[in-house]
Length: 589
Image (spheres, rainbow, N blue to C red):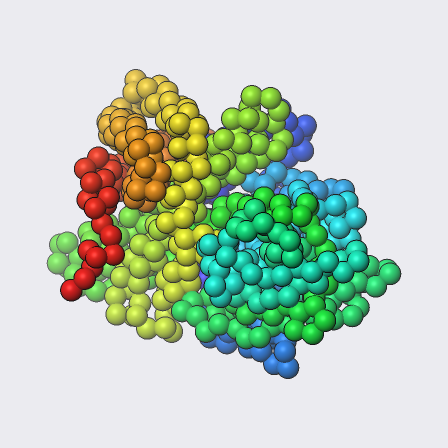
């Protein structure tokens, strides 16, 4: 079983040459220079490789369990979490007023790629904490911020998101959990399911963010409020004291991410769990989307991370495993010499390169939406909104193929659990499902993002892509540029078709949502691969082998991966009538 290696050079190249982090320089006031960035990434690599990766396989085998009403996590996880917290990693991009380091989020994203690739199950705990921190930072009162953020940013307390209920999955309008006013607090009563890291022993307290309804709340999503419900109530010194009326009922037995406890949580079995209102009454959906958008980009990053982990293991196996003869029939060959294995490995690598570029481009846009001002900030807000469903949806779909190919490269040994590669496929399978299924991401893209502004934001993005492609047409990149330009024109036509379909019927129009999301993912991936190729040519930090690797990756992507987008464009152009006619009777036998 190969060990994980943090891809320092690829991450640094993607940040500097593709995501173009220098765009942030005017707004960061010398906060980050190359030496600081490299130092942080080097230490992040050590944490991922030496502390977190070694407990990945063992955690998968052991899982978590409930004992005496408490979740006991897998061996080694508490020690790893302490190392993670003591290193200040969770507070990298947090507000300095509450103990954070105030660094741009692209740095935290680069750090988290390593954490997630090293151990996806472990990484979900800090991911949920970061989402809770973001929601509290943006929506809670100063009293609540001062009470909870310092400890959460220090990693002493963890956070969770409590949205889903047995009768309310993605349909949040059906939430039934109650919040009853009781003086200055609220009493929370109800049950939540699928709560990631809902309980554990790795931190001194767990700060649950819970969606619930007040007694006189309007029906639907307009009647949902958000509450902080700590596992332990705080004493006068702000330290955990009395146990709140919240406890774990059970942990789910899952296909993957075994070491991440997915909990059924019960609130208010006795007097009612004490909760504190975050923001305004009946305004919880706004705070919820703050958590969800943070988590959705985080899940896209998980798709990249688990793909990188699977690719590294497949590459190592293909290099070592001998099977069959070489081309000259003079010696046994490592399977990496076989064309079909080469095809599979480059299918993995070229998509990972494109996925990583998109992740960091989106992270920089997110930072610009916070640090920049004026028109730059306004444009970054729009771009971040556009990228988010594609990051979550398209990238996690690619992760399914890449982790499956890793098993295929291993042959029969990939189907054996001891090899370790099957875990990556099992772990990756949840990614298109949680934090809003990929169908929901696609509907978000075609509805809230495309239809709401009549395509203005998307057409602006397509115009920027076209501008760069035009610039590259006069270079030796022209053969690839032409292929991407042809796809760009298809994407423009598909965008117009989707706008017309949504205008005609916003419900039936969403039947085109998934192919549109996938088409845009492949196109944006191709554009960023081209940007990478352009950057490689004048890069003095890469050696000839690294440059050749990028050139192969871009060429393969344009010839073997990008053509998939034509199928989605065809589906959008000709498939609407077929989808419109579908109903439940289409499946009768």
